[in-house]
Length: 424
Image (cartoon, rainbow, N blue to C red):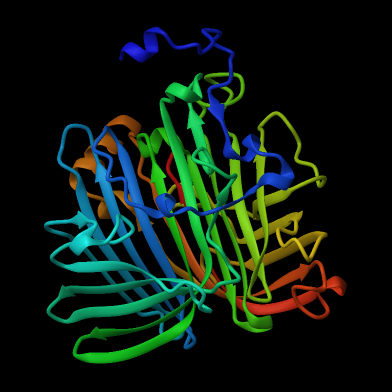
């Protein structure tokens, strides 16, 4: 409270009250390699801070597996912690889903650091193996019900470091409010963009082993979710061709309240992304799309575009029938200078005949009760998340050092999981 009395922030109502990470660093300074503290749990108990760690496994047999821990601090209530599991079979369209409110959650279990956590129902253990082909990994085990247990190892290859946008303790942060030093809120994402997953799921008495490429994202939303963003897009392409290829993007659209000219100048898209080619981190991208400017195709491009959107009476939102992702940035590999580009165009079908639609998630039906009441009361909206999983072809080009033939362009076959979230 007292810090606001002495804040140096402008009192001009037209002053910027959004400070995007996509504007905070120069084009050649976007790569910030993760430091140990970046993936530690903060477990903030202040008002409306939601912290998540999510693993996405694109298994070899056409199945998608999502493992997620959610730590939600809501107002004066004690934090709510959930473990969420989803398994989607793209061949049969069957979904196995379980969300459990866990008990006795702790970080730094048994002398480990805060990159590990556990509860009665699960454990996530961070491990190091310096100098090896896979110097970092997570072991995840969970007993979610009498008929549902799982165990997975997620290992990061040495050639694909974890990243955030920008180096240092401020790297990765988008700040909300006139003064970023006394921010009203913030958002941050940190990634392991390409990892190797192996594991077993025991469901209904049957044990099935899975393996395939995967990724991890650790995120914090440091304000009410319905005030932070009006919409989100997430794209996660994975392929084992060319020794490993990954293309990911995460973006959000601000509410009308936050923009570069104060309240009423919102609707700003903040996008961050990365490319992995040939089993090596190739590029980090970040782009801001302002509502009063037409986007250009110059400089860094990190962009998700909904195409042929139609009104969906099930949700009252306009859902895309096609999505285009674009990446364009400088190589982060010192011995492979040059520009790296990628494009991914996915046909999602129509409302009546969708392609790869997993489900339309009614967010308020799945989040904790106290968070549901807070969001619903303030926003008066009903948020939905569309989830799709499809085979896809990524077009890439860049320095030859990443993969033979890349300078002339390559077509990479893989799978893409993507979400389109509508908050308000």
